[in-house]
Structures are given as C-alpha cells and as structure tokens.
Image (cartoon, rainbow, N blue to C red; front, side, top):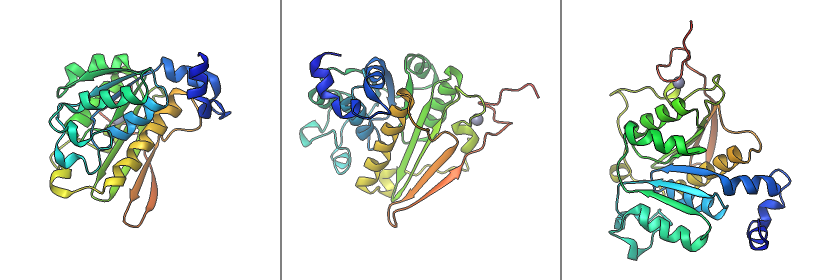
Length: 251
Ligand SMILES: [Zn+2]
C-alpha cells in the first residue's frame, strides 16, 4: 500500500485484529452483491469505503422514487437509472480505487455460477426466495461463504452460511423451498428505513470478517431483530443431514 492508502485505511490498520495484512487482503478481494436495494446499498457502500478491491453488483431494477426513503446510495437525480449504474457512480466518488462490475439483469443459476466462482464472498441482498435459493446453490457448489440478510416491515435477519466447512448449514437447511413460503414484499408490506441500514451494515461487517479473516462469523447462527422493540434473538442453525443442497451423502 502507498502512503495515501495507508492514510485512507488507517482506522482499520489501527485495529490489531485487522492491521495491514487484513487491509491488504480486502484490496485483493472480490465481493459479489446480489441485489442493490435497501440491503445492498449499505453493504456495497461499507465494502467500498473499507477498500474491498472488486465489487460485482447485480440488480435488474432502475431507481424508483419509492426507493429513496431507504436506499442511501441513490439521490433524486438517479430516479430512472439502473441501480447498478447509480451505485457505481456513487461508489466511485467515495473510493475510486474500487473496481465495480455491474450486471443490470435478473440472474438465474446459469449466470450465478461464474459470478459466484469469481467472488471470495457472496452477499445476498435480494428480495425473493427464488433468487435466494439460486444464490445458495451456487455458493454451496463453489464452496463460497454466503452472507444472507432480509428485512421487511420492522423485522430483520442476518445469517452466514459457510460451506468451506462441510459441517456448516446452508440456506436451504434453514428455509426449505416450496409454496408454503408466501413472498412478502416491501412494495405491499412496507419496510422501516433504518432497518435495512442495520441489516445491510451487519452483512458488510460479516463479509469483512470473513475476508480478513477475523473474529467469529455468524455461521451456525441466525440473528433476528424486531426494530419496534429493538429486541434481538439468536437462533442456532443446524445442518439438515438430508438437505438436498448441501448434504454430502454417503449415509
Ligand atoms: Zn443445506
């Protein structure tokens, strides 16, 4: 790192748990962010400010006026632009050293596989179960750590699924696939603005810890927050030995 970089990242370098080595690794790392909405905005912003070298941003949507209540990378002039383009412009202003790759499209399993393979950590900030399960499958298959987040109304949740250790659970172990899960959408249910910041920032924190590596990740735990009472709960997440996605078989 040059002098300007040592200065820019000095508050991380001061942390003995990170230091120059972890900061160097951030710069050499590639994070994939699926969904650049309420969660993806703060996640991308913190990863960019913290100097993660390459960010891949995936989102098919354009900025809508209703997004501005909580999606803090976007300003009024961005309404109508692709979210990935507006986010790239804002990130470039915050930290020009970050390389931002954009995918302004909905992605299925075929598109996700190479995107996940190229990443060191995957952050799921999407808003639908089909994408969440497709991202999980790609992460399990490529053995890439997945930082998952969700927020609706006043309810938020964060979890890490890290199949680099095959004893860990995947997203499917926790949330099976099927019609019994009714899709709940911000457009009809509403969402409390700072909640997406809380959850998205925590996803960035888990991603940076995985990249460093530092501390203990949320793997094996699901954190739930009710922002109305600001009560947090932690639920142990067990691996499903019969999980069709991550079970290793041989039994
Ligand atoms: Zn599983």
